[in-house]
Length: 122
Image (tube, rainbow, N blue to C red; front, top):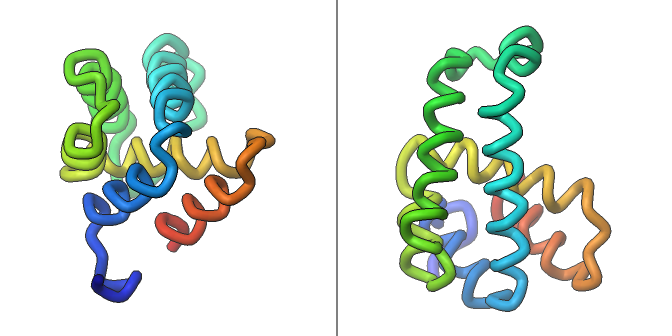
């Protein structure tokens, strides 16, 4: 296995899925909920937007893409989870949702939140 700092987002996602497969359905539900919230509350989110990496319209498009990929592919299996959600710029939205999920929710499995932080927190 490669060193942690040498793993791609896809490899990190694959590892997270392998270690915690039972946590993935709830995580996917949360990600879809966040994406829907971004899309449905566009006006409020646009006013508060301050990320210089993406315009709000780009972020809105990526959130829609992540939501669509989960709907279309299910993303329950390791391959779809890692490649559909962590391969391209959509990974920025997915990782943002992961960090919110790990830091805000009180997880029964504390190791899952720690693993998210370890793998995806820069």
